Amino acid sequence: MLIGEFRHTIDNKKRVSVPAKMRKDLGDHFVITRGLDSCLFVYSQNEWEKLVAKLSELPMGKASTRSFVRLMLSGASEVELDQLGRVLIPEYLKKYAGLKKKAVIVGVHTRMEVWNEEKWDEFKGKVESNADELAENLGELGVY
Image 1: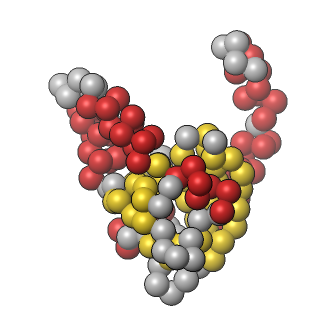
Image 2: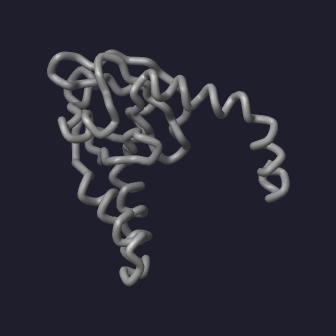
Image 3: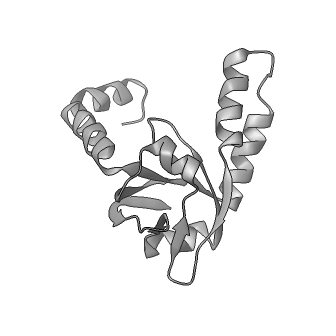
């Protein structure tokens, strides 16, 4: 399971270290793509195949469905770890997420997310200040 928050530097060659705790779940080869909230989603090969299977079952007659599938699949790139546990982030994904010198890597159960440090801090601050309301809403759904 992918969990935790880690801050890393992106080197001059657009590589970022993947936390050792996450490497065993992701494997040596995995998929990175555009995510939501201006971050990148990273999936193990197995989790990526599950997601693609679900996406392929969606009705293509609806414009919003087509758009979302295009966003996820056209932005995807298969990547691999180097010997030092780093991964190269393609330039178009680096630009999409607004990644500069620092990145925050977040484990979200079945995927890893890569965030611009400032965007992550802003997002996290909003969620933390709203945690009671979020918990209440989840409680109504029987989740929390």
